[in-house]
Amino acid sequence: MYLHKLKILGFKSFARKTELTFGIGYSAIVGPNGCGKTNILDAIRWVIGEQKVKALRSASMQDVIFKGSRGRKPMGMAEVELTIKECKGLLPYDPQADTVTIGRRLYRSGDSDYLINGCPVRLKDIQSILIGTGIGSSVYALIEQSMIQRILTGGKDDRRALLEEASGIMKFKIDRKASESKLTTTESDLARLEDILSEVRKNANYLKRQMRRAKDLERLKNCLLYTSDAADELDGVDLGGRRI
Image (cartoon, rainbow, N blue to C red):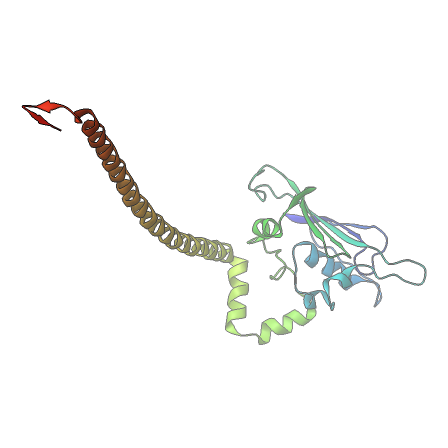
């Protein structure tokens, strides 16, 4: 698996559509200070799901959209596409796909889109296919000069997280955490369901008692009506010299 192509439009200093193609092996991007070399790294970090604006060297997420220049108007959207090749098995729903293109768009309104091979997806979907590959938004594959110092001087937890990601353990830890969270949510739902069922049972028992009372009342009314009709029929009948 390797980075094959990067397309940038409206992201930071890239007002024009820019396309960079990479081959297998080493690739280098050279140029004078201020030409946008670091913006390329920011574009890669952004398209694979970076949410921290400080990591993108910005004050807000809308700052990544081209702000305009003396000869160009500001743009209303930033878009980056990252194409990965020789990555069979990366997509769980299409394991034979040899090429995967990840895209991200951001509009000045704040709306955003995430894409995989041109199809809208969630950020979670992108993170799930990249985790364990080493090209997540905050892992060892994207290392800036300032990050080297943080790795060397960081705590043991930071170094441990880096090693776990490099060895592929992080994916299973995240899956386990997600499963435990779902189990906790399910247990909470079951407890709530039991409370609801208990309340429904109480109401059902109350309604059953009311129904029995209503039936008893109906039977009593029928008995009284029958007794009254029988008395009317016997009125005036001679029973052995006695009249009723």
